[in-house]
Length: 335
Image 1 (tube, helix red, strand yellow):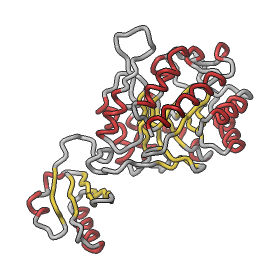
Image 2 (cartoon, rainbow, N blue to C red):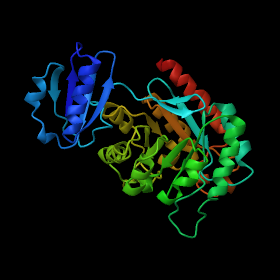
Image 3 (cartoon, rainbow, N blue to C red):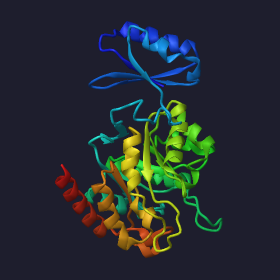
Image 4 (cartoon, helix red, strand yellow):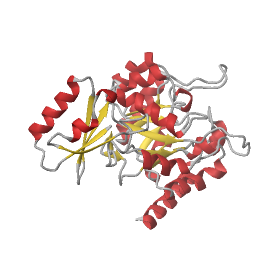
Protein backbone atom coordinates (compact mmCIF):
# COMPACT_ATOMS: atom_id res chain seq x y z
CA UNK A 1 0.00 0.00 0.00
CA UNK A 2 1.21 3.51 -0.75
CA UNK A 3 -0.08 6.83 0.55
CA UNK A 4 0.46 10.02 -1.44
CA UNK A 5 1.00 12.98 0.88
CA UNK A 6 -0.65 16.35 0.26
CA UNK A 7 1.62 19.25 -0.65
CA UNK A 8 0.30 21.15 2.37
CA UNK A 9 1.50 18.54 4.88
CA UNK A 10 4.07 19.72 7.41
CA UNK A 11 7.09 17.76 8.62
CA UNK A 12 5.48 17.51 12.05
CA UNK A 13 2.32 15.98 10.58
CA UNK A 14 4.40 13.58 8.53
CA UNK A 15 6.42 12.44 11.55
CA UNK A 16 3.23 11.93 13.57
CA UNK A 17 1.70 9.87 10.74
CA UNK A 18 4.81 7.66 10.46
CA UNK A 19 4.80 7.09 14.25
CA UNK A 20 1.14 6.10 14.07
CA UNK A 21 1.91 3.56 11.32
CA UNK A 22 4.86 2.09 13.20
CA UNK A 23 2.72 1.69 16.31
CA UNK A 24 0.50 -0.56 14.22
CA UNK A 25 3.45 -2.77 13.29
CA UNK A 26 4.05 -1.34 9.81
CA UNK A 27 7.26 -0.01 8.30
CA UNK A 28 7.03 3.31 6.47
CA UNK A 29 9.31 4.11 3.53
CA UNK A 30 9.27 7.81 2.67
CA UNK A 31 10.17 8.83 -0.88
CA UNK A 32 10.40 12.53 -1.63
CA UNK A 33 10.17 13.36 -5.32
CA UNK A 34 10.07 16.65 -7.19
CA UNK A 35 6.29 16.54 -7.53
CA UNK A 36 5.10 14.58 -4.50
CA UNK A 37 5.98 12.71 -1.34
CA UNK A 38 5.00 9.05 -1.17
CA UNK A 39 4.89 6.81 1.88
CA UNK A 40 5.18 3.08 1.23
CA UNK A 41 3.58 0.89 3.87
CA UNK A 42 5.23 -2.51 4.36
CA UNK A 43 3.74 -5.16 6.60
CA UNK A 44 0.24 -6.52 7.19
CA UNK A 45 -1.65 -3.67 5.55
CA UNK A 46 -4.93 -5.57 5.88
CA UNK A 47 -5.07 -4.08 9.37
CA UNK A 48 -5.31 -0.59 7.89
CA UNK A 49 -8.54 0.81 6.44
CA UNK A 50 -7.56 2.79 3.30
CA UNK A 51 -10.66 4.97 3.70
CA UNK A 52 -9.44 5.92 7.18
CA UNK A 53 -6.10 7.00 5.69
CA UNK A 54 -7.75 9.01 2.93
CA UNK A 55 -9.80 10.81 5.56
CA UNK A 56 -6.65 12.14 7.22
CA UNK A 57 -5.66 15.76 6.63
CA UNK A 58 -2.25 15.00 5.15
CA UNK A 59 -3.17 12.17 2.74
CA UNK A 60 -4.10 12.89 -0.86
CA UNK A 61 -4.91 9.30 -1.88
CA UNK A 62 -4.14 5.67 -1.08
CA UNK A 63 -3.28 2.90 -3.52
CA UNK A 64 -2.76 -0.80 -2.94
CA UNK A 65 0.31 -2.39 -4.50
CA UNK A 66 -0.38 -5.83 -5.92
CA UNK A 67 3.25 -6.86 -6.52
CA UNK A 68 4.87 -8.84 -3.67
CA UNK A 69 8.05 -6.72 -3.83
CA UNK A 70 7.61 -3.45 -1.99
CA UNK A 71 10.89 -1.67 -1.18
CA UNK A 72 12.23 -2.39 -4.69
CA UNK A 73 9.01 -1.22 -6.34
CA UNK A 74 9.02 1.98 -8.39
CA UNK A 75 5.53 2.74 -7.06
CA UNK A 76 7.11 3.11 -3.61
CA UNK A 77 10.05 5.13 -4.94
CA UNK A 78 9.26 6.84 -8.27
CA UNK A 79 12.69 8.46 -8.71
CA UNK A 80 15.68 6.42 -9.87
CA UNK A 81 17.96 5.27 -7.07
CA UNK A 82 21.58 6.38 -7.48
CA UNK A 83 24.10 4.31 -5.54
CA UNK A 84 27.45 5.62 -4.31
CA UNK A 85 29.96 2.84 -4.99
CA UNK A 86 32.95 4.73 -3.61
CA UNK A 87 35.71 6.90 -5.08
CA UNK A 88 33.12 9.26 -6.54
CA UNK A 89 31.58 6.53 -8.72
CA UNK A 90 27.79 6.62 -8.81
CA UNK A 91 25.56 4.05 -10.48
CA UNK A 92 21.95 4.66 -11.48
CA UNK A 93 19.85 7.45 -12.92
CA UNK A 94 21.90 9.24 -15.57
CA UNK A 95 25.15 7.74 -14.27
CA UNK A 96 26.63 4.91 -16.36
CA UNK A 97 29.55 2.75 -15.27
CA UNK A 98 31.63 -0.06 -16.75
CA UNK A 99 32.77 -2.81 -14.38
CA UNK A 100 35.65 -4.83 -15.81
CA UNK A 101 38.38 -7.27 -14.85
CA UNK A 102 39.20 -10.97 -14.80
CA UNK A 103 36.75 -13.69 -13.83
CA UNK A 104 39.21 -14.96 -11.20
CA UNK A 105 41.91 -13.13 -9.30
CA UNK A 106 44.98 -15.14 -10.25
CA UNK A 107 47.95 -13.24 -8.83
CA UNK A 108 50.41 -10.68 -10.14
CA UNK A 109 48.60 -10.25 -13.47
CA UNK A 110 45.68 -8.52 -11.74
CA UNK A 111 47.33 -5.10 -11.60
CA UNK A 112 48.30 -4.95 -15.31
CA UNK A 113 44.78 -6.05 -16.27
CA UNK A 114 43.25 -3.48 -13.92
CA UNK A 115 45.44 -0.69 -15.28
CA UNK A 116 44.48 -1.57 -18.85
CA UNK A 117 40.78 -1.67 -17.94
CA UNK A 118 40.90 1.74 -16.30
CA UNK A 119 42.84 3.26 -19.20
CA UNK A 120 40.23 1.94 -21.64
CA UNK A 121 37.33 3.42 -19.71
CA UNK A 122 36.37 1.06 -16.89
CA UNK A 123 35.33 2.85 -13.72
CA UNK A 124 35.04 -0.19 -11.42
CA UNK A 125 37.22 -3.29 -11.08
CA UNK A 126 35.76 -6.80 -10.89
CA UNK A 127 37.47 -10.03 -9.92
CA UNK A 128 36.55 -13.21 -8.11
CA UNK A 129 38.52 -14.20 -5.03
CA UNK A 130 35.97 -16.87 -4.10
CA UNK A 131 34.65 -18.84 -7.08
CA UNK A 132 31.52 -21.01 -7.21
CA UNK A 133 32.32 -23.79 -9.67
CA UNK A 134 30.12 -26.52 -11.05
CA UNK A 135 32.83 -29.10 -10.40
CA UNK A 136 34.32 -29.43 -6.91
CA UNK A 137 37.64 -30.20 -8.59
CA UNK A 138 37.83 -26.87 -10.44
CA UNK A 139 39.79 -23.95 -9.04
CA UNK A 140 37.81 -22.31 -6.24
CA UNK A 141 39.73 -19.03 -6.18
CA UNK A 142 42.46 -17.53 -4.00
CA UNK A 143 40.15 -16.66 -1.11
CA UNK A 144 41.28 -13.96 1.32
CA UNK A 145 44.60 -13.54 -0.53
CA UNK A 146 42.62 -12.66 -3.65
CA UNK A 147 40.68 -10.03 -1.73
CA UNK A 148 43.98 -8.50 -0.61
CA UNK A 149 45.18 -8.28 -4.21
CA UNK A 150 41.95 -6.53 -5.20
CA UNK A 151 42.45 -4.06 -2.37
CA UNK A 152 46.01 -3.35 -3.56
CA UNK A 153 44.70 -2.64 -7.06
CA UNK A 154 42.00 -0.39 -5.61
CA UNK A 155 44.57 1.56 -3.64
CA UNK A 156 46.76 2.18 -6.67
CA UNK A 157 44.00 2.94 -9.17
CA UNK A 158 41.56 4.66 -6.82
CA UNK A 159 38.59 2.78 -8.23
CA UNK A 160 35.94 0.70 -6.41
CA UNK A 161 36.09 -3.09 -6.52
CA UNK A 162 33.27 -5.57 -7.08
CA UNK A 163 33.77 -9.13 -5.89
CA UNK A 164 31.56 -12.09 -5.13
CA UNK A 165 30.67 -13.39 -1.68
CA UNK A 166 29.52 -17.00 -1.42
CA UNK A 167 29.02 -17.66 2.26
CA UNK A 168 27.59 -15.54 5.11
CA UNK A 169 30.45 -16.84 7.29
CA UNK A 170 32.90 -14.94 5.07
CA UNK A 171 31.17 -11.58 5.42
CA UNK A 172 33.63 -10.35 8.05
CA UNK A 173 36.51 -10.80 5.57
CA UNK A 174 34.76 -8.46 3.13
CA UNK A 175 33.72 -5.93 5.76
CA UNK A 176 37.22 -5.76 7.30
CA UNK A 177 38.72 -5.00 3.88
CA UNK A 178 36.04 -2.41 3.14
CA UNK A 179 35.03 -4.12 -0.12
CA UNK A 180 33.10 -1.50 -2.10
CA UNK A 181 30.46 -3.69 -3.77
CA UNK A 182 29.44 -7.21 -2.79
CA UNK A 183 28.39 -9.39 -5.70
CA UNK A 184 25.76 -12.10 -5.28
CA UNK A 185 26.16 -14.53 -8.15
CA UNK A 186 23.48 -16.34 -10.10
CA UNK A 187 23.86 -19.54 -8.08
CA UNK A 188 23.25 -17.65 -4.83
CA UNK A 189 20.45 -15.43 -6.09
CA UNK A 190 18.01 -17.30 -3.84
CA UNK A 191 20.39 -18.08 -1.00
CA UNK A 192 18.12 -16.25 1.40
CA UNK A 193 20.40 -16.50 4.44
CA UNK A 194 23.19 -14.85 2.45
CA UNK A 195 20.81 -12.17 1.14
CA UNK A 196 19.69 -11.37 4.68
CA UNK A 197 23.25 -11.09 5.95
CA UNK A 198 24.41 -8.67 3.26
CA UNK A 199 21.16 -6.82 3.87
CA UNK A 200 22.32 -6.09 7.42
CA UNK A 201 25.24 -4.12 6.04
CA UNK A 202 25.13 -0.82 4.16
CA UNK A 203 27.55 -2.08 1.49
CA UNK A 204 26.21 -1.84 -2.09
CA UNK A 205 25.19 -5.23 -3.49
CA UNK A 206 25.30 -6.25 -7.15
CA UNK A 207 22.63 -8.95 -7.37
CA UNK A 208 22.65 -11.25 -10.38
CA UNK A 209 19.58 -12.94 -11.83
CA UNK A 210 19.38 -16.66 -11.11
CA UNK A 211 20.30 -19.28 -13.70
CA UNK A 212 16.63 -19.75 -14.63
CA UNK A 213 15.22 -17.00 -12.47
CA UNK A 214 12.23 -14.92 -13.45
CA UNK A 215 12.25 -11.15 -13.24
CA UNK A 216 9.92 -11.27 -10.24
CA UNK A 217 12.22 -13.74 -8.49
CA UNK A 218 15.14 -11.36 -9.00
CA UNK A 219 13.12 -8.50 -7.53
CA UNK A 220 12.07 -10.62 -4.57
CA UNK A 221 15.72 -11.45 -3.92
CA UNK A 222 16.42 -7.72 -3.91
CA UNK A 223 13.53 -7.37 -1.48
CA UNK A 224 15.23 -9.79 0.94
CA UNK A 225 18.30 -7.53 1.01
CA UNK A 226 16.31 -4.31 1.31
CA UNK A 227 13.98 -5.67 3.98
CA UNK A 228 17.01 -5.99 6.29
CA UNK A 229 17.79 -2.29 5.91
CA UNK A 230 20.22 -2.12 2.98
CA UNK A 231 18.72 -0.04 0.13
CA UNK A 232 21.88 -0.12 -2.02
CA UNK A 233 21.01 -2.89 -4.48
CA UNK A 234 22.09 -3.09 -8.13
CA UNK A 235 20.19 -5.54 -10.33
CA UNK A 236 22.13 -7.52 -12.94
CA UNK A 237 20.81 -9.29 -16.04
CA UNK A 238 23.33 -12.01 -16.94
CA UNK A 239 21.35 -14.33 -19.16
CA UNK A 240 19.06 -17.21 -18.27
CA UNK A 241 19.19 -20.91 -19.05
CA UNK A 242 16.94 -21.93 -21.94
CA UNK A 243 16.91 -24.72 -24.54
CA UNK A 244 19.32 -22.73 -26.75
CA UNK A 245 22.80 -24.26 -26.97
CA UNK A 246 24.61 -21.84 -29.31
CA UNK A 247 25.26 -19.43 -26.44
CA UNK A 248 26.08 -20.13 -22.82
CA UNK A 249 22.80 -18.53 -21.75
CA UNK A 250 20.04 -16.51 -23.42
CA UNK A 251 20.65 -12.80 -22.91
CA UNK A 252 17.28 -11.32 -21.93
CA UNK A 253 17.73 -7.71 -22.99
CA UNK A 254 14.04 -7.06 -22.49
CA UNK A 255 14.71 -7.54 -18.76
CA UNK A 256 16.60 -4.24 -18.72
CA UNK A 257 13.50 -2.32 -19.81
CA UNK A 258 11.11 -4.36 -17.66
CA UNK A 259 13.22 -3.99 -14.52
CA UNK A 260 13.56 -0.25 -15.02
CA UNK A 261 9.77 -0.01 -15.40
CA UNK A 262 9.05 -2.07 -12.28
CA UNK A 263 11.87 -0.91 -10.02
CA UNK A 264 13.81 2.22 -9.16
CA UNK A 265 17.03 0.24 -8.66
CA UNK A 266 19.95 0.51 -11.14
CA UNK A 267 20.18 -2.24 -13.77
CA UNK A 268 23.53 -3.57 -15.01
CA UNK A 269 23.99 -6.02 -17.89
CA UNK A 270 26.62 -8.75 -17.98
CA UNK A 271 27.12 -9.84 -21.61
CA UNK A 272 30.13 -12.01 -20.77
CA UNK A 273 28.24 -14.61 -18.73
CA UNK A 274 25.19 -14.22 -20.90
CA UNK A 275 26.68 -15.38 -24.20
CA UNK A 276 29.83 -17.16 -23.07
CA UNK A 277 31.86 -16.52 -26.22
CA UNK A 278 34.26 -13.65 -26.78
CA UNK A 279 33.06 -13.11 -30.36
CA UNK A 280 29.59 -12.10 -29.15
CA UNK A 281 30.40 -10.14 -25.99
CA UNK A 282 31.15 -6.79 -27.65
CA UNK A 283 27.98 -6.73 -29.73
CA UNK A 284 25.83 -7.64 -26.75
CA UNK A 285 27.52 -4.95 -24.66
CA UNK A 286 26.52 -2.41 -27.29
CA UNK A 287 22.97 -3.78 -27.43
CA UNK A 288 22.63 -3.54 -23.64
CA UNK A 289 23.90 0.03 -23.74
CA UNK A 290 21.36 0.94 -26.42
CA UNK A 291 18.63 -0.78 -24.37
CA UNK A 292 19.29 1.70 -21.56
CA UNK A 293 21.26 -0.32 -19.02
CA UNK A 294 22.85 1.75 -16.25
CA UNK A 295 26.12 -0.12 -16.61
CA UNK A 296 27.99 -3.11 -17.97
CA UNK A 297 30.01 -5.87 -16.31
CA UNK A 298 32.60 -7.33 -18.70
CA UNK A 299 35.34 -9.91 -18.20
CA UNK A 300 38.83 -8.90 -19.35
CA UNK A 301 42.02 -10.99 -19.25
CA UNK A 302 45.52 -10.39 -20.62
CA UNK A 303 45.82 -14.02 -21.77
CA UNK A 304 42.37 -15.61 -22.00
CA UNK A 305 43.67 -19.00 -23.12
CA UNK A 306 45.52 -19.31 -19.81
CA UNK A 307 42.74 -17.94 -17.57
CA UNK A 308 41.81 -19.99 -14.52
CA UNK A 309 38.11 -19.70 -15.41
CA UNK A 310 35.87 -18.48 -18.23
CA UNK A 311 38.71 -17.61 -20.60
CA UNK A 312 36.45 -18.38 -23.55
CA UNK A 313 34.31 -15.33 -22.84
CA UNK A 314 37.00 -12.85 -21.76
CA UNK A 315 38.03 -9.89 -23.89
CA UNK A 316 41.68 -8.94 -24.25
CA UNK A 317 42.55 -5.40 -23.12
CA UNK A 318 42.68 -4.24 -26.77
CA UNK A 319 39.28 -5.74 -27.52
CA UNK A 320 37.88 -4.18 -24.37
CA UNK A 321 39.24 -0.76 -25.34
CA UNK A 322 37.44 -0.97 -28.69
CA UNK A 323 34.18 -1.93 -27.00
CA UNK A 324 34.49 0.98 -24.55
CA UNK A 325 34.99 3.39 -27.45
CA UNK A 326 31.88 2.04 -29.19
CA UNK A 327 29.86 2.20 -25.95
CA UNK A 328 30.78 5.87 -25.58
CA UNK A 329 29.64 6.52 -29.15
CA UNK A 330 26.26 4.86 -28.51
CA UNK A 331 25.72 6.80 -25.31
CA UNK A 332 26.59 10.03 -27.09
CA UNK A 333 24.08 9.21 -29.83
CA UNK A 334 21.37 8.51 -27.25
CA UNK A 335 22.02 11.70 -25.27
